[in-house]
Length: 371
Image 1 (cartoon, rainbow, N blue to C red):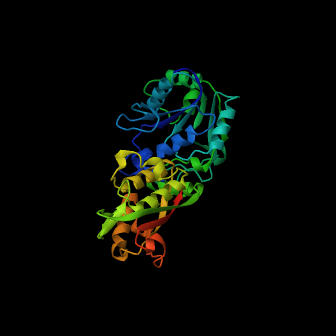
Image 2: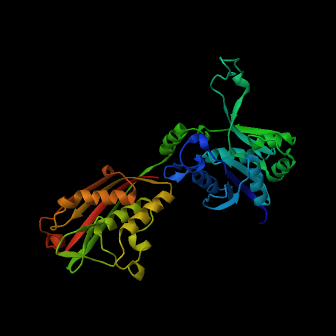
Image 3: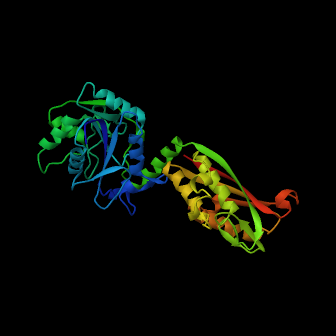
């Protein structure tokens, strides 16, 4: 590829075993998304970053452009730099730091106007001491800083520094490699949001920080279908015994349709007809659960989390009470939520209107998400 002004390189090829879990830490979920995806999105959406490349193990996959890593972090970075080909500036970032403030990126890129490299740092606030059988001497913390990523570099300078690095010798970050090549590295203010996830408890801290960044959104959905003879009656993903069923292009599950519209509304993604038009024959008789799960996947793709669903079914018959718990359990299963995150209510219109005359069933839903 041709020259690009600024490329972000995410290092995500490590094993990440100290964080625990069944997968490397960079692929553990934070707010419904892998750590590496949080980092990728933060970098990809910054206005001064033109391209994002992720270095991963050969048995893994990620969104966007990726390249296979090496046996060590240094080799993985070099593989990534080689894959980039050419650029003016590069930010090298550890996937284990999923929350990347835009302001830190701004400071790093501005610092490259005067130096070949720049790193975000934070002061050391704890006492530092040597270890052994007993507590050792205390270090002067005023002369030390905590170094974070992303680290920003002149692309040609960091690529040359990596190529000149002695074989078999390792470095814990790329700033060391640039300094060995004779270049100064500027320091800019870092951010606690960039703290690295290393141990199991760090995930909980990151969840709390992410939660503080998220905003609550609420949207409603409403749907109506006609009751006719000869059709099955599906409500909330449950087959309800009744002498009539709902008529529609799909299975006409009015409850799931209302919830689906509410879920889509929380991310301003249109309505169910936008995604599953009734004119498309592939959705004839389709199970509405797949519509709801599609909507939920779009919320997850936005980094959102569904917190609560409140459903009201409006009809004279059949009685919803006996099916309330199965409906609640089915909706919870479709969305991957606990049953106590689903409210199912039923009411009548006192025999007024089309529902009161038994001509159809209506449903309305309200969904709350954090995104």
